[in-house]
Length: 268
Image (cartoon, rainbow, N blue to C red; front, side):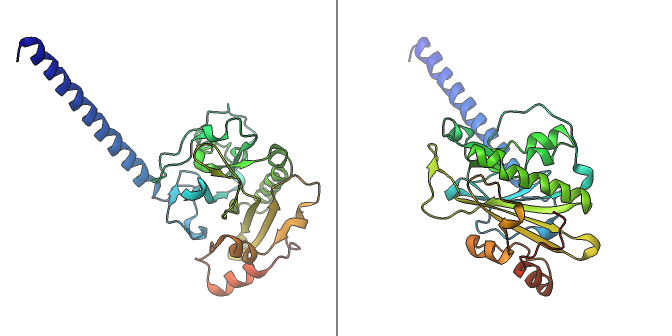
């Protein structure tokens, strides 16, 4: 082996070593992010978290989610919206980022590009304006689902605003939301992100330790109907999703509030 060949061989060895080292560092970093995502965080009331049908629960600082890999989105996103969280501060809108805490790999934001659908937030950015970090955290791709623009900016937006009203009135509520995920849904993008035909939102008020719940089931289209027309029982949403929404409540309370579709105790 002449000098030129020797130097080339050494250069190849160095490049391979650097590649292997960088790959190791990236793997370690990804593992650390995933492990951190398994830990409940500051603004998550773990007591009211639903069950997961997938076993992929991720805890961010200001919301938790259960990721459903076959549909490339969360089956639920859950968070506490306290009265003190409400803010009118308008933060600069960041770019969407792939959620590295999802072990199976969260869908890329490019799936939505030129799809005709909005990147619809499940935990709304408007509910996390109390800090720039909390606001920007809602722009992870695990927190979005394909939504028609008229739906996203119409009745879905009205419901989000009503939840903020209840958060102020009851000094905080717990929210669980997501799309109804099932076989045969339309998909978008190279990764096949499912487009739900229906979306749900469940709001729990635990004032004085006496929980009451209001659940909504909306078809994926805009509507001018009043919101109370979309109230259903939690039991109905559980049948559609296979999710047990409040497993930590004692059975008597859980059965009572999940069977009810009454909205009379809520201020509309």
